[in-house]
Length: 101
Image (cartoon, rainbow, N blue to C red; front, side, top):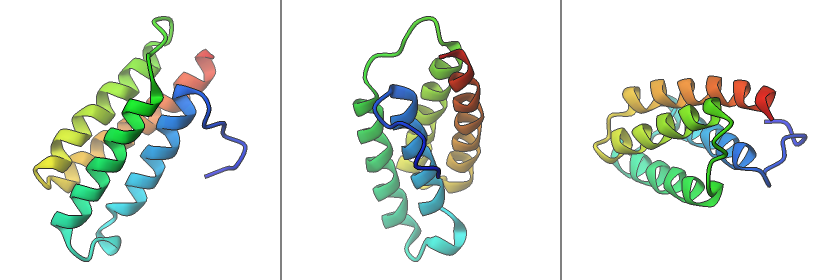
């Protein structure tokens, strides 16, 4: 993750969290999948709260938030692969959100 990404914006907060959670739920990073999924879910939920309100004029950011929220639900049930898929989709939407800022 580049240090050039600002974490002061909702996009930056969410982008940092998505990258960190993706790294933490890699198959090689999960010693205990249940505990790892719980930590990842908690971290992502904290980031979603920290991201604050979403700007209506940025649909890509709205989609990224929706993907991240859905990933939280999958992490809650230790559905790691589904959560990773949604986090990858969130990452793609965040790239688009940067262009809309």
